[in-house]
Structure formats: structure tokens, C-alpha cells
Image (cartoon, rainbow, N blue to C red; front, side, top):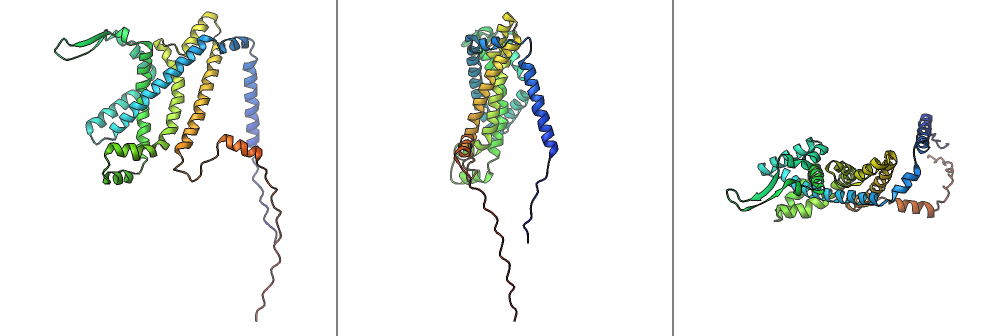
Amino acid sequence: MEAIKAIPVRHPWRWVVAAFIVVFSAGAIYTVATAPNLRWPVVQHYLLQDRILLGLVGTLELTVLAMAIGIVLGILLAVMRLSPNPVMSTVSWFYIWFFRGTPVLVQLFFWWNLGLILPTIGLGIPFTDVGWHARTSDLITPLLASLLGLGLNEGAYMAEIVRAGIISVEHGQTEAAMALGMRRAQVLQRIILPQAMRVIIPPTGNETISMLKTSSLAFIAQYGEMFRVSTEIAAFNFRIVELLLVISFWYLICTSILTVGQYYIERYFARGSQRELPLTPIQRFRRMLFTFHAPPPTQLQAPPAIPSEHR
């Protein structure tokens, strides 16, 4: 009896669409690269220019500080949202509702123009002269306005991410830990959060990459990040597209580094959920280079069956 020969299903239109995409992409790249008014020497000149690099440092600084505020605030809001106390749960819900419902650009513009409605900001004991006062224009610097706008907004999104990670852990583990005498804070720290990190890390990495690009909105608060620096230079030499290509290059470099870091952090926290971790890209490349596959064995024909004798 001959073995069944499986014939794979052909998909000619997949190759047609793939060829169209490759040709269209190559044509678009060639059109932009050979644009008659695009000056590539200008791009090369400003790629490592001091002002651009200072703007890059400002962008990274704002990203790190705003994400730190957002993560800390998100954890607190998520715990408050899951609290049995109705006051804490309501306050957390209202905060998330408000900051997710208003555009981040509006929030940045509000904090930068806070002095229009509050000329001074003070802290003190009510009905006494004891206190501290300062002019809002002196207190709200471009960096502080950017951190308030981006950090407080990010805290609302991180709260939902952390809450999703916490409720992904089976509730029976919380009950078992509390039955052993552990306090709620200990259960959260030692039982829930280590397991919830597997769910929290991927969207947090996406939020970090998004924050890196959203930091460009801080130009509205006169903060010296990379986009604002490029617009100032472009206002002087009128090379707008060339400067946009320069900062796009640095944004791509930073997001690529963050993507690699996110991959390895996700892989680290996925150790307990999989029996065997998948190979990293470097390991797969190394195996492809140094692993030699033996040729598949030839199929041997089964010996003819000998009919049994019936007596």
C-alpha cells in the first residue's frame, strides 16, 4: 500500500500581494530619498549636533521621570480601586475617569497656564498667618508643568494596567495567604504582585514607548525636549523636513532599545508560566549558524504481511 502524498495548498495571491507591497514600499522609499529639495547633508550635519543631543537628553529625562510618577501613582490608584473602602474606591474611580477622559495636550496647557487663575500658591494652617506662599509663575517651571501633565495622565492608564494584573491572579491564593495570617499589604507584596508582573510588564513597556513619543507634546510648556529644539533650529534655517528626519532617527533608536529591553523583561517574568522559555533572537541566530541538520531518513517499505493459518 503506497503512502499518502500530501500536497500543500497553493496560495498564489499571497505572493502577488507580497510582491505589490515590496514594490510599492521600495518606490515610496526611493521617491522620498531622491526628493529634489531634500538636503541629506543637512540631516547628516544635525544628526550629532549639540543642541539636538541636549534635546535628546531632555526627552529621555522627561520620559523616565513621567513614567516613574505614572507607575507609582498607578499602583496606588489600583490598590485604592480594589479597596473595600468605598471612599478610596470612589476617589480612585473619579481620578481615572477624569484624567483618561481629557486630552493630555489640554492637561499640559492647563498646568503651564495655571498662573492665570492662581497667581500664588501657598500651604499653611487655616485661620492663621503661618504658612508658605510663592508665585505660581516661579513655581511652575517648564519641567514641572510637563511632569504634572504627563505623569498625572499616565497614572490613570497605569492604574488600569496594574488593576488588570492584580485581578488576573486567582483569588484563592489571596484567601490562602490571609488564612495563614499574612496582612493585606504582605499578600499584595509577596503573593499577588510577583505573579501579576507577567501581565503588567507588556502594556507597561508599550506605555513607556508611547511616553517617549508623547513627550514631544511638552513643547507647549516651553520645555527643551527634542521636538522643540528641532523646531527652533528649523525656524532659523527653514529646513523643517530635514530636522524632522533627524529627530525621527533618534526616536527610532530609543524605541528600538526600549523594545529589546521590554522583550527580555517579559521573558524574565514569564519563567513560572512556561515549562521552557522560547529562544532569544540571538540564540535562534546562533542555532541557525552552528546547527547542521542531518538529511531526513528515507522511508522504508513495510514488509508484506504474512497471512496467518487458521486451523
